[in-house]
Image (cartoon, rainbow, N blue to C red; front, top):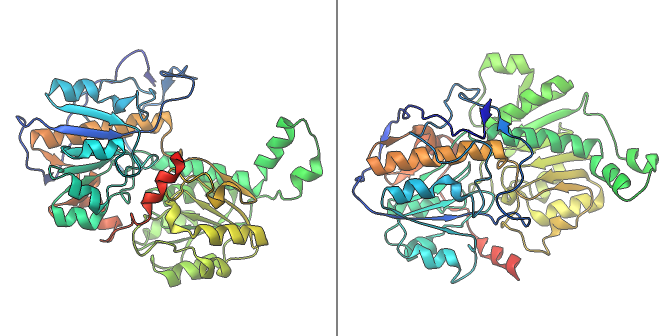
Length: 430
């Protein structure tokens, strides 16, 4: 276990494969857009004094290996006052570090700081939408970093055209998200949230609680994509004696399929997904957002699903048509919908998913547990160290480099832009 009272020991620098050209003498401006502090103040009173130490992910990839860090494991790092634990390091290197929370709408704090920024850091949970227009505001912009996983808030096509590097911290919170998926599957199928509200509201009507409650045992669970998160979900649902299916552009090894008893329904094309959802009681969406997956779950896709099926979407909100989901819940065709991803983020206060029936939505929190924050903050630090030293960045952290999809980006994404409509996030402030 790692104790809060002692900083993480320094680890050897990562072995990297792709060179970024910079010099250690450059003085740069780094802008981070982070979510707001707790309403009760910062730092919070932590529930635990330690978190488990994870050194290697299930696929053999090592966790981030910066030369050092300036925070304690389990600290709240993703909010404004947490600063991703970067200020001491960046300022000791002579760089300027600016942290903002106001990220949406013309003239917001982010846009004011972008004009002379060299690097921008954002999180999927509080995404700074780096559109082509914002890139045009930032002639010095060299790198867009995601503190987490998922870089669809960056216009990847524009980044390639402009030679801007895009990175994320692959695998840092994949298991965190998979755990959230399993939690929400159980919450929907067992009708947990209405049952909990019975107690909060002083009630004890058993029939009200169980009239929508079922067992997951024997149900067919299908994942759209079986990468790090999707595979982890399948592995965690296997002990519930569920029947498992998946679609993915990269088929799992035969031994993995056999161990899970997982049925492969084809690639990431629409026809394969339609074929799978017809057989599923529960569908979990774990694919990246890019133009081909935008509104993949539209009215036509939902019509292919069993009556009374459930959807859990912790991938990206824009993969689902928000009004089609709402209508399917209201009609009873879907029994439940859960997840933590919305579009845009934060969603307007009149977003239809806030008030639709039989949902178990949360804010975008699945990948920003305190355990995950330790890893993605360390991964950002590692990437910055490589960048400033002119050393290669790990392949698994690269999305775009040298004008093309690179590293894990070439494996997981397709070129294009998925930021359209992000300007609506400004409505949350009104």
